Image (cartoon, rainbow, N blue to C red; front, side, top):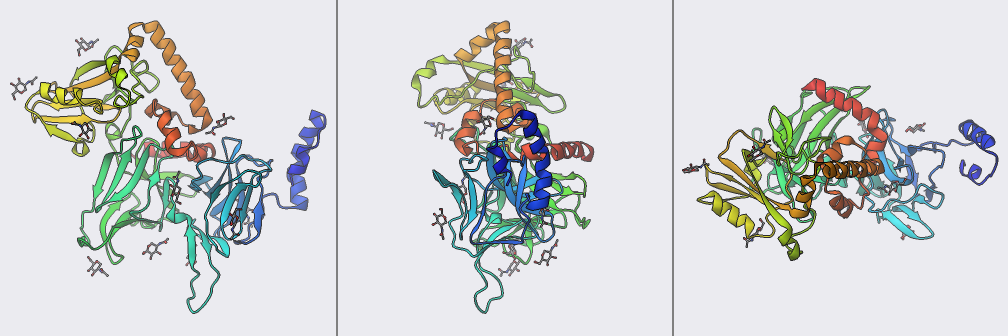
Length: 502
Ligand SMILES: *[C@@H]1O[C@H](CO)[C@@H](O)[C@H](O)[C@H]1NC(C)=O
Ligand SMILES: *[C@@H]1O[C@H](CO)[C@@H](O)[C@H](O)[C@H]1NC(C)=O
Ligand SMILES: *[C@@H]1O[C@H](CO)[C@@H](O)[C@H](O)[C@H]1NC(C)=O
Ligand SMILES: *[C@@H]1O[C@H](CO)[C@@H](O)[C@H](O)[C@H]1NC(C)=O
Ligand SMILES: *[C@@H]1O[C@H](CO)[C@@H](O)[C@H](O)[C@H]1NC(C)=O
Ligand SMILES: *[C@@H]1O[C@H](CO)[C@@H](O)[C@H](O)[C@H]1NC(C)=O
Ligand SMILES: *[C@@H]1O[C@H](CO)[C@@H](O)[C@H](O)[C@H]1NC(C)=O
Ligand SMILES: *[C@@H]1O[C@H](CO)[C@@H](O)[C@H](O)[C@H]1NC(C)=O
Ligand SMILES: *[C@@H]1O[C@H](CO)[C@@H](O)[C@H](O)[C@H]1NC(C)=O
Ligand SMILES: *[C@@H]1O[C@H](CO)[C@@H](O)[C@H](O)[C@H]1NC(C)=O
């Protein structure tokens, strides 16, 4: 519809006039926002509308709270998404590795499969099903169903968005041991293990460090060994339940709204800082209802790499000649290569030590017991996949850091000594403060650019200076950003709420 105006070449003022009247024309002639039938059938086809800047609904649910459609990402790209309409918050995004352009060439259709393609070139994403209709349920679940066939009164579900969650779980959604949710920056994930919920960080391509683990407390029901895997569900009554079978939960993690039977929607999201939070929709904003990690210093990387998080004090830098500014230890070493596969670089490594540091989430960290600090350091020194170690002289525990150094904990306890490999090249930068600042600014500019490109929020680059490489590898840049673009306003309200709730 709006498309036809695109090809018209006219003086600018006329063009502006046209742009202004498009919405009115649309209203008179054809509903621009593709009036939502409550199911889509084979043969359905849509192109992105060039005049829409954020979201083009294709299908609404019966309550009008949810909408499935085309989300405009980074202004030029398109993603399939399910939105919470009142807040414009994105609840689900199709996990296409590359996003197509928001252009006439891109087509979204349902032919039994839900498909995004550019017919001239390629298919970007497809559900690879042979269904009859596409339905959006009133819990935001997008389903591809077979038509009712026989005795059974329930349609057969061939595919559903609830089985492929993005970074969010909504109430009633089942999260099983075969699923993963990933934070929008691709760094953190949530999975279920043997009777626990685990949060994992991907600090480099090899690492998969668990930083939060919640075991089933079995207060209401016992786990039956060999009784099958567990699954998790957000209960509308304000809790996260872990189940082995449906009769009784083996664990209940309650939210602030526990049993308060609020009207609004509840959702649980894995945030870009690695925290798992629950929010409820109060009708006008999202209120924080739960957070898995309440102590900032226990987050996976609150002060950036080579940062030091001291409870009650905040962030500083491990190298005390480096200042913590703009959310990171600028000028600090970038250890973005793999020393094991690049043996020459071993020569560039210098050692840095710091007393009074500890590892975060230490009960989840790998350690060995060594009789002395020297032996702990030796263990790390001789192993190219060790990036550093922390020795606790009192217990003899030698914690091995087998991923690039992130934020450590600051403690007043000098019997805990950190040993870190730092790349020499990066160290040089710190010798000349002027140059360091220059490089810092350059880095900041680059990060701003990256931020603008899609990772949107300040918070993310604060946490994650060096992982852009990983981001690109892990997500192809595809999953990042979208909900930020759209939801930044409501996100501000979340952050404000989170302040007032604590
Ligand atoms: C579907 O929802 C959109 C908002 O996302 C709204 O603009 C549109 O009018 C709705 N259509 C119907 C038929 O309810
Ligand atoms: C997308 O989801 C499919 C399953 O639907 C999974 O196999 C694939 O690994 C996912 N891709 C990404 C980039 O997460
Ligand atoms: C639907 O379209 C896709 C992409 O063009 C194609 O690969 C697939 O075979 C089609 N499916 C059916 C059932 O026609
Ligand atoms: C959602 O739809 C089901 C029937 O499909 C209904 O029982 C339920 O009450 C609805 N829930 C809401 C919140 O509208
Ligand atoms: C979650 O799983 C339970 C039991 O398997 C099932 O009864 C329920 O319908 C599921 N919820 C959704 C939204 O699929
Ligand atoms: C489900 O768990 C409960 C409590 O542990 C147990 O009593 C019940 O037998 C289990 N049911 C099934 C079908 O396994
Ligand atoms: C920095 O740390 C070193 C040893 O860890 C110490 O000798 C030095 O006094 C510290 N400098 C400052 C400015 O705190
Ligand atoms: C080196 O460290 C890695 C990771 O910490 C560990 O898996 C491996 O066993 C170590 N190799 C040796 C020879 O100790
Ligand atoms: C470490 O522990 C040993 C004995 O356990 C003690 O002799 C030594 O003084 C301690 N060193 C520090 C730095 O606390
Ligand atoms: C976002 O758009 C810019 C240009 O507008 C482009 O350079 C960049 O690659 C895009 N980002 C992503 C993640 O595709």
